[in-house]
Image (cartoon, rainbow, N blue to C red; front, side, top):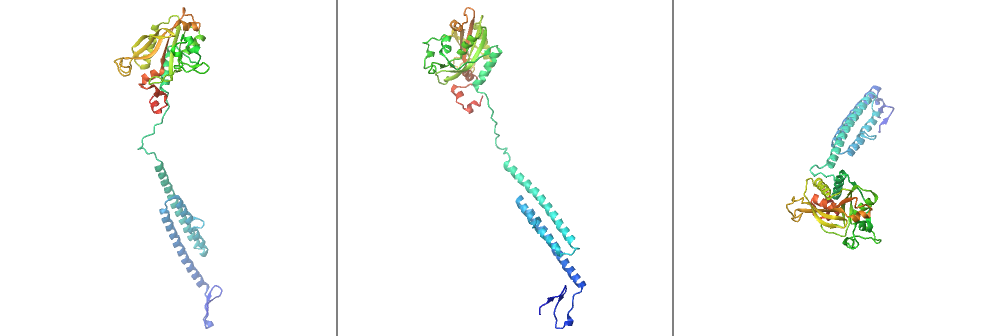
Length: 380
């Protein structure tokens, strides 16, 4: 015969109806209390077990994402501790606060463990990142390259500075010239070799690339009245290319027009120039020469800067280095610009700034300065 439930009590059938007994209220209370006490014990043990599992999982977490998964698994809306709270409905009013407090305490402890572990993992992550991105101090440092002026430009600035201190004006002019300014006004006749096609770059219309900066002097003398003194630095062009010549090179020419100009004053100026440029006084030598635009004319040599005049490969064992040409301005040049040679005299000189750069820096091949080799140019 199957048992049947009647009201709260449980009735078990018997052959003798007189043997049936209904549970009284006290028995029901004690049975329910015993069941509640047993359930509380089970729940508390579950809470302790869950907290131990959480502690172990947090301890073994390897990264932030894994730790976040642990947080969701234990403290999330569907987490293990949250599920425990749902069982409070089966507990007595006296037991619910105890279990609730234990659950909340476990949550706090697990949260604290997670925060501590999170800090450790982020610190570890940062250290790993810094270690991966750190500067290897065992490698040589990378030098920060800085730009510098071309050696010829440096020479040009030094020459300009010297002559500025001496009261000279610095003038400039066009690089494309006419035959009048480049040749005729400078007393260079039509049959002179310098006017040949193999020495000068001509354009189809008869104009040309200037072969010296002397045309600047002619233009200045046309515009100014003497006395005056000036230098004209700039690029010039000639059909020439070897170890000491290039089709384009840099020249500076000086001119002084006054009523009492002498070669002696020019010699004194050049001695001061080279002493300032090379940092020590050098012997000078004037050798007679010929230029169409000066009379008399001279080539100027300086004491060899490498051997101090003793003789070496640089000076071809002569003890001297040729550096410039000079002379007294030819009367025909003064007449071409309407200056009376009876009232005024003048002297002029011209020298290659590339040549000075080679001597000052010890460069053997002029062409090296114009090949745009940064390894070479960065030395200056």
